[in-house]
Length: 231
Image 1 (cartoon, rainbow, N blue to C red):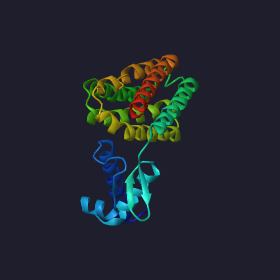
Image 2 (image 1 turned 45 degrees about the horizontal axis):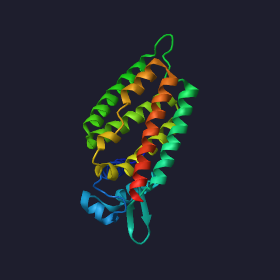
Image 3 (image 1 turned 90 degrees about the horizontal axis):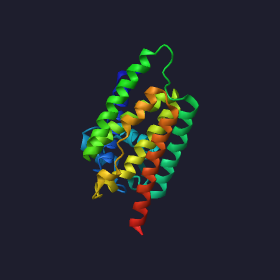
Image 4 (image 1 turned 180 degrees about the vertical axis):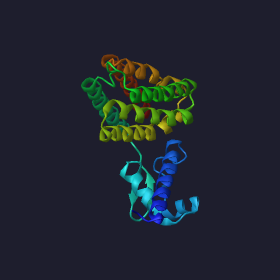
């Protein structure tokens, strides 16, 4: 059994990592922005050890870059990176839905699946409302939790669900700075969460795939617009 000090440090490490990830997702830590372990430790009033561990964790998640001499900086994803993220999630999710016929309701409904679907739908409703209102701060949190819960539900494979979750966070890290500068942000925020979870609830794999494909096409269209604007 680990010592209580180790438990406390690991908890603090996770709290710092979560707080910094939220700062990046909110756009308060910008791509390319640099900082040191000492600066973060002083900001949160903690020792350097859990901060360093948290920063290393975020590097492993692809959110930060480490420089031996200059400290850490927020990773800057390119439009090409974003396209690759969309393609990766498209291939994985398409495969999941076609192979598993997502969360198909069995002849005798599984109570646990039913409860999970209700939870996912509630998060989807909240995310869709935020998307229609153009409220990025609310949308990001609900959207990430929605996709994480849905991924675990339909894949029944924690490794796949974790991979999709990581892609989701990385895609938001890329998107946030661009979306905050969009004049017509409502036109680029996806709000099909409820439509997708309804298809999953019916066990309709084809409908679920159609929703996800339309979403990915929408994402790639936005990437085209960003690329044209950058020329």
